[in-house]
Image (cartoon, rainbow, N blue to C red; front, top):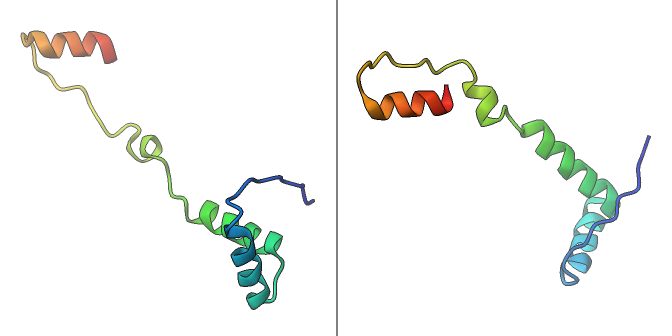
Length: 74
């Protein structure tokens, strides 16, 4: 199912974008949709998804800076 989307772009961009789409034989909407699909598909895992569970608390007894950070963040 398609959904209508209203976007705002620089007025100088519209004619060039329409010409680019015409040159490819597609509508401007199709061109934008394809670009968005490509961006979403190419998007890898986020920083937190990549690193979740990879860090372990260091054993560093007696270091007051470590103890303060551990109390705050662990």
